[in-house]
Image: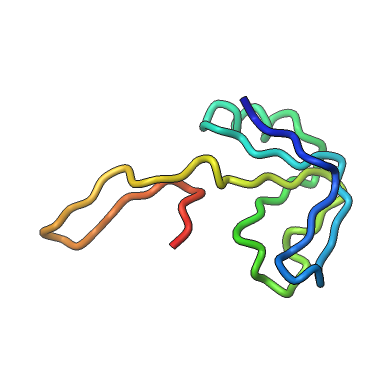
Length: 89
């Protein structure tokens, strides 16, 4: 089940802040799809929060993909890996 957190968000430095109606952390693609359909807009996806620009700030919804992470597959020959959306590099 998706985690709904306090209704505030900031980047790592605190320079960019927002007070959205919803901050959510879905745990799978189904929960993410439900959020896309039902969350108050505009909906923004938060990454690691390192940006100094207000790209994520929203009065609607902010979604973190941090629980949709991990290695899906890798190919040693081609030096390629497939990872889920919330996987940090």
